[in-house]
Amino acid sequence: MDATEAPGHFARRFQQIAVAVFHAEVSAAGYELTPVQYAALAQIANEPGLDQATLASHIAHDRTTIGGVVDRLVEKGLVARAINQKDRRARELRVTDQGKQMLAAIAPAVAETQRILLSGLTEKEAAQFMKLFAKAIAALNDLSRAPLRAA
Amino acid sequence: MDATEAPGHFARRFQQIAVAVFHAEVSAAGYELTPVQYAALAQIANEPGLDQATLASHIAHDRTTIGGVVDRLVEKGLVARAINQKDRRARELRVTDQGKQMLAAIAPAVAETQRILLSGLTEKEAAQFMKLFAKAIAALNDLSRAPLRAA
Image 1: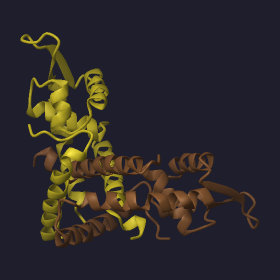
Image 2 (image 1 turned 60 degrees about the vertical axis):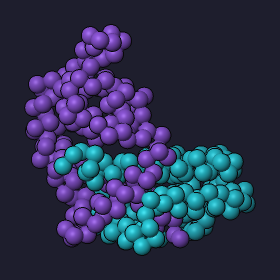
Image 3 (image 1 turned 120 degrees about the vertical axis):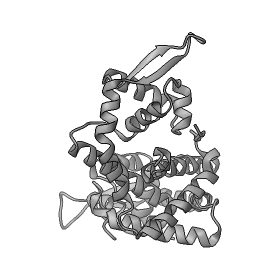
């Protein structure tokens, strides 16, 4: 097998393209946000009050990375940290009004990114591809250093 | 669409897992090599004498990244740079005997990585998945900052 036809090569290429398309679409909409910052912001919006470790597992990133990502979102005024009254060592994360406005404003750019990523396939092929992709990844979840835990 | 069911999320997850599995398999075989170092080494072995810019385009990495990767391979004694006699500013890359031995030694670990990445799918599904993956990526090649140019 040619190395550029191996699944590991496709994995890297698709991720490289996904990041490039995300940046292009979000910048064109007038915003600056990385894919991982977006993933964290969207997840905090879905689960207001969750803590950082839970956030990391719900978007399948390692905790160290997510610590820095949340710091940046707080600096940008998009996320606020509050003390959890039941466990004072824990911090609850919430999206600020500014963060909610940004999520709404970039939603079309995010949707366009996902559309572009599947644009080489027919609708039927895209559905088949996503089904197989989900199945392949689900089987490998425990091999990842940062497994996904369903919210 | 849930953000964790979007193609951009799958792209990141699959790449994250691919890198983790590659490291685990190659370390277990007793070697230390990153996926991009491997991709560069294997491509230089396939095209002895190619220059760095060509290498970058043939494995779809940007030139800046590849400069550092080749530096590391030279430091490790796996690749040698030589002056091109026709264009003295250019450098020809070749895999050293040590590099060839390493490629042979890690080949089973690399093959095992690729097998594991598709292990959640039946043989028929894996073939279908790889076909759709190739098609999706080919259509997006020019959207990448580092398009793949066939060798």
